[in-house]
Length: 260
Image 1 (cartoon, one colour):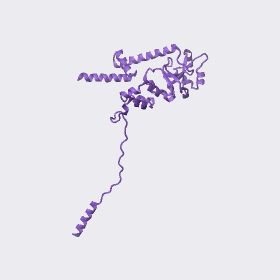
Image 2: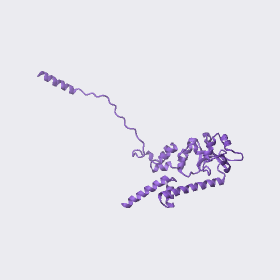
Image 3: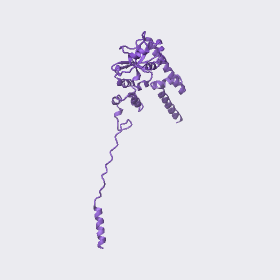
Image 4: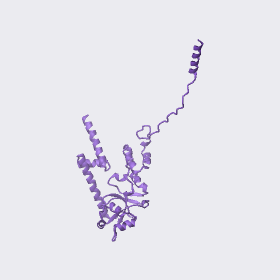
């Protein structure tokens, strides 16, 4: 009997002893994610604050931010914002002209810039390559030349820029070269600008023909008339892919509301 009482007393003592647990660190709260979809974070809905944030992004990230929502697209598609992101890495003071497509701004590599050299008697591709410290093949590739003889049918050549310091504080002009068949930001080392009216008119004609080809492509893809294709291209800032996506969304909405 005494033995049973002793066992019960020991059990009571054990139960009254506070239990000890190993120290387990409490989990840290998850980091706060800043998102325009977060209803508790309304700062990103301010255009001025959003502009001060997006202007720090490189061109590719700026283009991605335009896909977030309408507000972000409006801020990220602003001409001043695009020009600043494009010219900022090289210290370009100003970029004059409007590209045929907003996709031009998405890449700010040095290959987007070129020097305009007005050809004179005695100029050769090899001589220009030596003068500007570039490779002969680079000049040919930029100007869409198959051989050195192509220099005689042109009034100027575009020279690749290999020294970024040439762009510091400079003004560049967006031009679509007739022979090179590409759009670049042209630097005039003499401090002037595009003064040849025929060259400017040729660039305008090439740009018009390019817009016409894009318009015809969108019209055939959507099976619509010229007016509808031109409207959606204008709404998409000349981006044919975005124009076709917008048309598909409108068509889907129209079909859904027709059945209702």
